[in-house]
Amino acid sequence: MPKPVIRTFAQQTQDWIDTCAKMFADKTSMRTFPQPPVEACKNAGCALSAKSRALKACPCNLRKAFVGQTKAALKQQRVQFHPDKFSQVPEEVRASVQQAAREVFVVVDGLYQGS
Image (cartoon, rainbow, N blue to C red):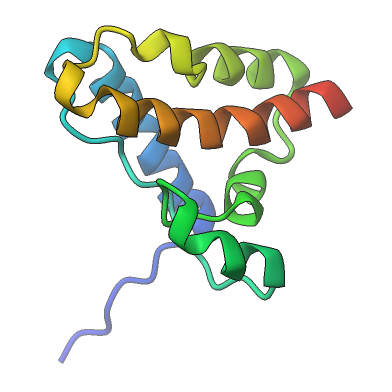
């Protein structure tokens, strides 16, 4: 039996970013927000906030996905994930998509401001 292919968090992140680019190209057809990669997190705050988050990925996972990017790349990501950029998403799913985008934006903005 062949061994399962284990993809690194970085590979999963790149796949997610590529998926986002494809989905964000036509926001009028979006029905869901692409889920970022998730790894186990030992942060108690993340465990407590899990039920109130739109994304399965906690802020620690999101931070790990974007840490190390240049200030210019973070600025680009910051613009891409700004919740206002999702106003063309169909109304019936707009609030949930914007909430998910906001969760990513907050983390990216924090990294951008701190760089």
